[in-house]
Image 1 (cartoon, rainbow, N blue to C red):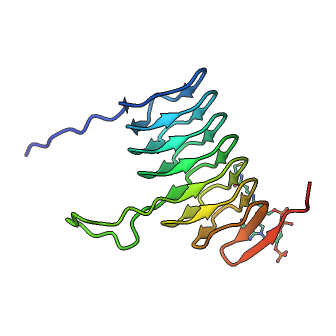
Image 2: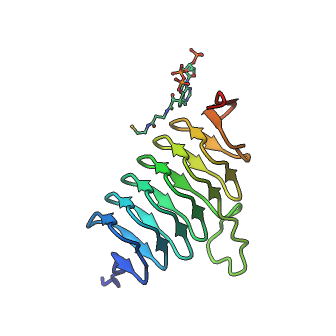
Length: 152
Ligand SMILES: CC(C)(COP(=O)(O)OP(=O)(O)OC[C@H]1O[C@@H](n2cnc3c(N)ncnc32)[C@H](O)[C@@H]1OP(=O)(O)O)[C@@H](O)C(=O)NCCC(=O)NCCS
């Protein structure tokens, strides 16, 4: 029995100044601003564009084509998805990457579904499945409860 090995690591990616990247990551064809932190076992896929001062905690997945603004916190184990009906062998699948704004905080183990936009300064609770757009300044407490932050 033999198998081919897929080499992981960091490939064809540009970083701004002062980024810190853990040694067990899989990042390819992405762009980062300044002062970002990328924790261990994070995957960032092709055509992702991430702003400055973004923190990707361990075990998170940022899927192909996503954009993330500045000053955004992605918690441990956050999953994102860009294919609504994934199927092995599909060639012409529609890539619907989520979009995450600036100043957003996403709690541990949340899942952001294809095409969802998360507005600036919003908070997504731990474990939420986010299936609809989130207006700016919102708190999504659980998958079925959303409220607005007080004006600051
Ligand atoms: C969503 C969140 C911001 C809400 O905080 P809050 O506004 O202070 O809300 P409270 O703790 O007062 O909880 C309000 C209600 O929502 C429930 N609730 C809070 N967070 C929840 C969540 N993530 N999922 C489901 N229910 C939740 C509480 O049980 C409570 O229910 P009740 O009204 O029936 O008693 C917070 O709970 C959260 O999940 N933060 C993210 C934490 C995290 O993952 N950090 C990253 C790594 S440390």
